[in-house]
Amino acid sequence: MLMLIISGCFFSVFGHEHHHHFYLPEVSEHKAKSFLHKRQATPNPRYCTEITYESWCESNIPYCQGQHEHTREQMCATSAPCVPGQHCLLTTPCPGHFTYACVDIDECASSPCQNGGTCHNGNNLYTCTCLPGWTGHDCEIDIDECASSPCMHGNDCIEDRINSYVCVCSERYEGVHCERDCRPGPADIMFLLDTSLSQLEVMNRSIEYMTRFVKQIPIGPNDFQVALVSYAFKPELVFNFTAHQSNTSVLDALSLIKSERGPTTTSDALTFVAQEILKPENGARLLPNISHYAVIVTNGLSTDRSEALQTAHFLKATDSRFKIFAVGVGDSIGHEELIQLPTDPSYTFAPDNDDLLMAMLKDAVDYGCTDCNSSSVTDVVILFDTSKATSPLTGNSLHSLKVVEKLIDSLNVTNTDIRTAMMTYGNGSQIKFDFHQQSIHDIKAKIYKVSIEDEKGNTSFALSSAQEKLFFEVYTGSRFASRKIVYLFSNGKWPMTEISEIKQEILKLHDVGISVNIMIPVRSFNAEMDNILDNASNVAFDPFRVYVIEDNASSVSLALKAAVRDTKYVECPPDIFKAKQ
Image (cartoon, rainbow, N blue to C red; front, side, top):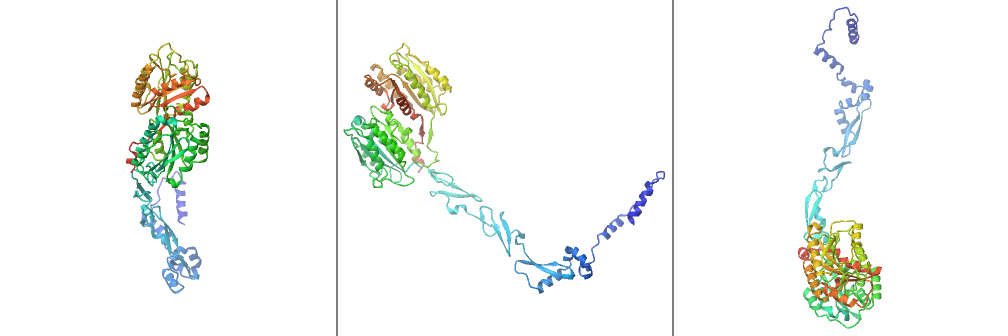
């Protein structure tokens, strides 16, 4: 009715445009609220109690549930009670058919799980799934991650955060759990010493090399052990790994070694070592953390070269339980043999440095230790004699330049950290290219432009110039911390008056860390070779650094493989054993 009246009023007001406008009387706020109140009045409670209103109650169950708390309590108390963990509800609160039910109580409603744990409701119970780092019924206990002693070798554990710990490693150990033992060793080293007649004059040098090596490693049952096999016509075990358990004892035993008269049968010596190096009765420690090394000290001029190389290849292919190294000591060195005897060609070493020791120290620590590191940071100078009398071009056509080209290829300067420069010399010297990177094509083009000059050579002056103009001049691209090597190409026919001067200059270079390799390319061995080798051995710091390279592919390949070996090396801290106590 109200709506009709209002509509009519609107019609009469807006239906006669010529009448004066008038306004409806304003409805008071009290009357407006009263109207709303009457429309939202609470139903009569008897709708929920009298059968007459059963249908209304069924349609308004939530409302009626609130009207029967007394009835619910009475029914739950007098009927079969709910089991613990359940709650009694009046499920149908309508007078025609009052019923009740037992429902599970949600134990998780109170959020009992602490520290971010997830609650799972059960029958009269709850369980908590804890975040990592927490435990306990309510995730109230912080787990001690150090309780399981996760840090190895007795190193300390610190629980620095929830679900986290830190191992505080001593200087000796590295890794998340201090699992890497970075003290080199323990290892068993068996020296295989050539005591044949050809080594008679250099036996002291062999002993000096082994002495220097042993002085730099700790000897003992928990460190390095040293055994010695001598061989000439047949091998002999001089002392086993446990005969000498201190540095002093080993050094005393080395000083008593004598040379023998006989041929050099390296094949039998290698077979003997393979049979003896792993025998427990010889003191070998057959444990997973013990490395085993055989070090051949020889000149590489075996009487049974073919058989020796076959035996070496067989051992490399069939027995990986120990590694074979080779050190070239002698008045004359057979590089082709020395490079093939070890387990790997890179395991051939000069006796005038500690490269073998450094390589062995790196090999004898756990993988991933960072104290000893491989490097190829090397500056190489090719010093090529172009004087008429002593140039390797004389009588050799292009063989010597082809050897230089193959040397560049062997250095692999585009893919390593090795840099090369080239200087030619007669009476003076001329830089063909310095250490700054150039294309291989340009380098080789400059190599083949080298020719003989009608001048007398001055090799000692050229060596000095290489030091001053290339190695020690920053603008040439040289590097202060690099290893420095000179490859001196000559025919070796220096006058006797110059031998001493060249020798002195090479000694000076050695003193400032520059090694000089004497490279003598020859068409073939001839009657002059003995004199050439004598000259080269006399000027070289050590005969190991003399390379005679015949004009055939095999000789060139093996000689250069040996000649470039020390452009790749290992660097270790000088006090590594003190630091890694």
